[in-house]
Amino acid sequence: MIVDGALQGIDYVLGCHVMNQLEFGGVFYHCGATQQARAKFTIQIQGKGGHGSSPHEANDAIVIAGHLVIALQTIVSRRISPMESGVVTIGSFDGKGEFNSIKDRVILEGDVRCMAESTRKKIEEEIKRIAFGTARTYGCDITVQYQNDYPVLWNDPSLTKRVVREWKKAGIAPVTDCGPLNPSEDFSYYSQQVPSCFFYIGAQPAGKAYPHHHPKFDIREEAMMKAARAMTVATLTCLAEKEMR
Image (spheres, rainbow, N blue to C red):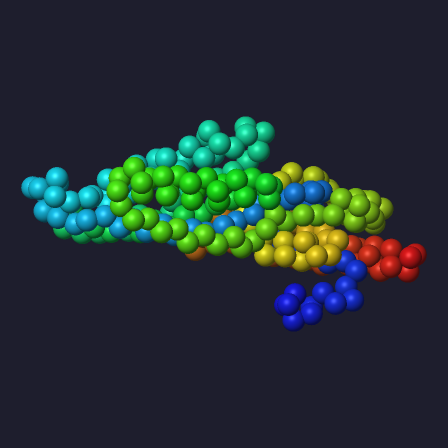
């Protein structure tokens, strides 16, 4: 949409998301870095297959991949400052084979999350360094495909504070700074280009609140009326700001 010109002539962008993990009826916001950046990577380990009785004639890709999985966890624990946040997850370890054979190839797929672009760059560098170092250590071939996608969602502090002030003037309550949130959000592409404000409406159901994307996910639909009112006030705030220029 951005490439096709959706932001041409746009002064501000507003976004709203109902959240069933947040208290019903509340309006939540945060200034600055608000949702995590995301990346996806695929690592292929190519060893040498063989029979389980003769490991010296093979180069076990499963053993190599196991060491690599553990080594990658040291990026967050030993390479990223404790004052920063980062996550490296191996979500897929594809090494299916026969019980008595040594696997020649394993494919790992993983996920990265962080709250700063500097951290994002550091994690990518470390994943590649550890992977290629593992290849040299074990005498195998390793390839890495790394894709940075969603950037950090940045709420423009000035715009967000103005919107919050107008919510309170309009009697919309409660309004709460929820702090940074873990999931990534494609709205972040807008926030890179134009001053933006992305906020949340508490929609916690009466029963158990299953996480978003869970098969039993549900919300209290009355929260959508609160969302409409909050978005209306936010929109009028932006229009008034435009008229004052």
